[in-house]
Length: 178
Image (tube, rainbow, N blue to C red; front, side, top):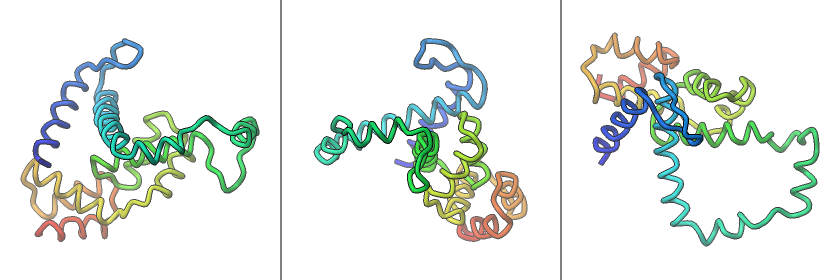
């Protein structure tokens, strides 16, 4: 199942990187746009399937906004305890990315910034997403080893290039049998 999902992601990514069709019926091209399009396609499929399974619980939370919610949205500055819309959306996007691929902390920040989020929104999302960066290094090392052969040294270097710390990289490699 995971290999099939990986191959599907790879095919979507390759197809989307050549040229993808966005929601406004315009063409996007390039590596990062294709990457984002593949992610959005997969996450929307996942969201659709998860919303079907939890429709009864989400129907009460998706009711029309109350007057207190609309008065909060009119406020020009959010309270310290509530995230801004940008922070909230960045957090959702970060979780979507982590659902299908492994990222280092800095790599996820860069990806969110590429998506158009500010640095502060991206940092907020990465700090609040609950990721275990050591486990992310394990997953990323596994992804690389499924794709190609690496020496221990080069795999550690590749993980560090991806933004993992040296300790995270060594942990990721060791947990994959090196």
